[in-house]
Length: 377
Ligand code: NAD
Image (cartoon, rainbow, N blue to C red; front, side):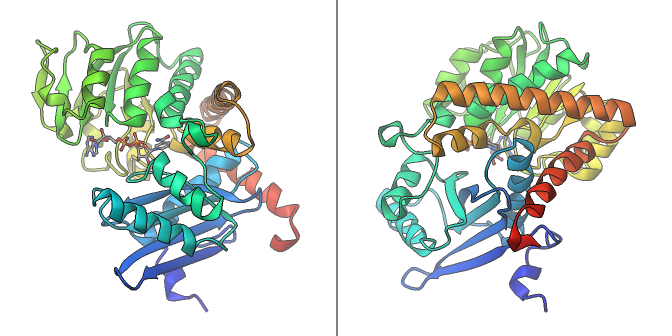
């Protein structure tokens, strides 16, 4: 019989997973948390712990499956999982520490899950988790961590994916016009790494609005400004730029569009506005399946999230194994380049959507690992 809690994971129930759907509640405060361990055939599952007031079981399950596929595609010795703490991440620091330490204690015996940072949590939170249970990734450098968001591991991988797309003839990086939605840990770094490869940042947005300038925005200055906590639209060093609503970024005329903010930002409702040649999916599940299909029919190359944004989890996996940042970046480069090239080549050969090729690749690897494990027999 399907338990209600498993049913709440939506359509993400099949022979792969989930292996565990755990609901936790802290009676004194009423704070709740969700952990979905999707599949651990390749090893214990690394996955972010998200803190948001509106996080749901279905969202966590969907992201956990995405982590299974991402780790499998990257051939990491890890499965897929995700967690969500239903709380406001901007609560006072002492309260946040208490909540995170409670969460860590509550998952002490859920050894198949290794927490990492995600929306609303950071390396400091992971240090608290590690302090409680000795198990987390994305730790501060002082605890042997590789600061993946500070170094831009995911943004680096996205730039490598863009190189692979350029090698396949999908774009020319020198002079490419880039639009980045979301100017956080992923967005800032992809803008930086792509501009180092000759591209021009023509638009960038954050939660408060978008800056658009076809002549190019000053990437380094914009990063410093945004890092200091200022909204992009208040940046005064972009004289000729238009300051517009954040939604306008999707429709910017560009060569490379990088959604790097939230899920489901390009849907059937706005996909016709998209004017680009290449979509690099920096965020997790930023496009609906229908939107990807529409763009594919229009000849726009959409490179799937868990192929091109795997830099963060590769870095976390290297950290977990005791490796160095140089090793992490070398592994990101090798893996993301090879996977992106394979997906583009097979999609061109068969006409399939890149995501369908990527699904086949990753699912094949998960099933291969499952066949080698007694617990899946
Ligand atoms: P972040 O919190 O550092 O930055 C998010 C940015 O998006 C901020 O600039 C915020 O203002 C902006 N934003 C929020 N809503 C927006 C909207 N509607 N329109 C435009 N901008 C908006 O987060 P991050 O670590 O950069 O992650 C971004 C996305 O990428 C998330 O979906 C995350 O799950 C995914 N991701 C992150 C990593 C990583 O290594 N950090 C790896 C893989 C996937």
